[in-house]
Image 1 (tube, rainbow, N blue to C red):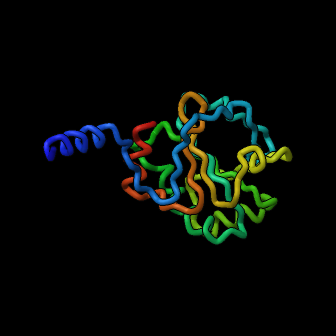
Image 2 (image 1 turned 90 degrees about the horizontal axis):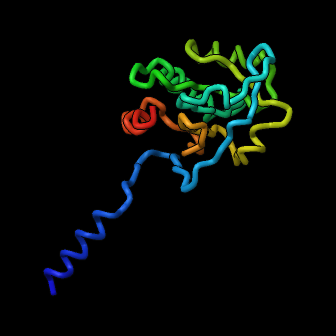
Length: 169
């Protein structure tokens, strides 16, 4: 009987999903298509997520008044320089209705040098993604499908996170 219990335990553990212990990371059970969504660059030009198919995409939703956004932005800036993630496109999208001047000051105060500023469209991506708060980051794979999201702030320099993200690069 003891032998049977050990065999059942070993078999059940071999089929268990690998647990990812990364703060605030939620992996989607079903992939979501967002290829037709648009947002604006700092010059008010419209960009389409679908134009970046073939790249790993991180959409980071933030605002200048958001303290956790301020906390995580420097590590997001450093993530952009990570050579092992050379296929990663990062789009920090301001959803706080802040103007370009206020957004640039936010980046300047935090010494953000590697990221550009983007803005939500009047249609609002925040509503389309059903964001429940900021910061929130949406991860989109090379096929243009959302596979995970980070709800709340995260240290984008966390080795576990970078190693996990490298699997999708």
